[in-house]
Image 1 (cartoon, rainbow, N blue to C red):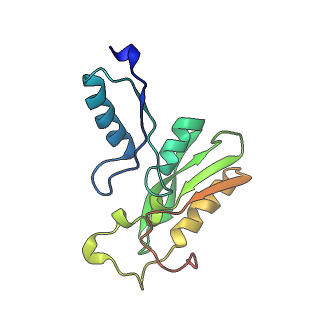
Image 2: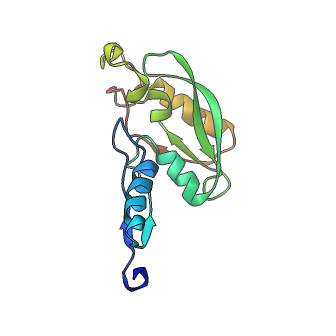
Length: 148
């Protein structure tokens, strides 16, 4: 029966605050496969949380931990990805450092929030040897236009 059906492409983004795009794709695919419907799952991201992980999964590369600051200038550990798709290409997901989910709701203050941590991630990528840096800018807790 499944051989007669065209596969369904499941290509979701994350469900903000609940499920990652990979989790959504897996849940939908599982439901379809239970009904013997062929599925091609392709988690997506819009430049916010999960973008780096999806690009590394699709193109290869290595995620490494670096030190940075969150939007309220508190130190944290964040990840960048190196050699994504090609040597010397890095992916920086700014949400890793200055993402909205990293700030408790009670502490969110757009006037005090800084994008400084995003610059730290870019600097870490170049110091690690990247000559090309892809910057994913979604999911930020900041409104300073990158002034950091």
